Image 1 (cartoon, one colour):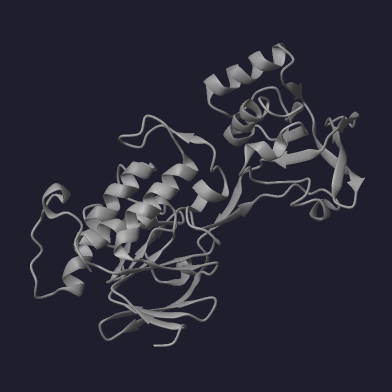
Image 2 (image 1 turned 30 degrees about the vertical axis):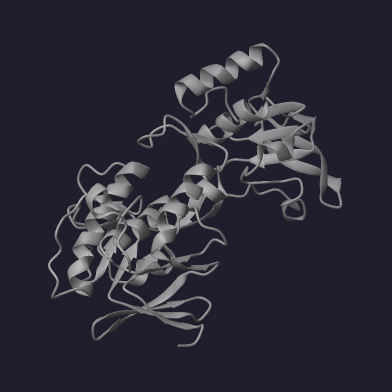
Length: 338
């Protein structure tokens, strides 16, 4: 079989935490997986958006950084030898005699018995502020994600936005940056109340500067290097903030992409599933994680983990129709060989 054509038991769409754990749960019932993700690395938003941010609700870990969680999940899946197709997305699904043929944006074809969608919120990208010439600064002085806090040590940082990302990174970066300025159009923030209280306490002590009520108006600099951010009030009053870096946190633009055309029952851009099996409205397609909805659904990583365990066991009869699945605990079965 050529490098562009493959066969497996399950194609997992999405290599975030839930997708990685889906590989493990499928492996525990002797199902082989290929994994497709549009990003160039595994981990989804944990890798792309907040690798250094701590997570507190993963069982067994009182605190774990997002990047460490991804590394652990990748290591946990490794014994089942998943094949990753990164930097590409699934463009087409075609039904075959006994399953599906998945075709990616790079022309890779994978035949499988079942598809498990664990694509988080779907394809995502930043909401860019409408500033003239901003693209010339992107990747050098303007960043929409923070992947390494150390990159901002000693820098003059302007953070724009009033949500959790803006406030959380202001709290974190003030520990390493030379100066942190938070630009927001009003004095009230949309972040968690305790985070907003910490932000304002630090501002009262001059550890952070709150630039309110202002909005971004223009950028100043040369050759992609920022040296000033112009902000303005609604009345037209302007200020120049001396800055090395601008971090605009105006949320993510999210879309399902080709998934929206696959005939799945969607509710508000989420995939409706049976929570006991992960089955969708299309036979042979399953889903788990933040992309699914059902009564009582909680968008927590730990809930997505549980959903993959149930989906893997629902998929099993498609791959091993003549072999009944006997439930076993991992302490008894160990890691099966596949």
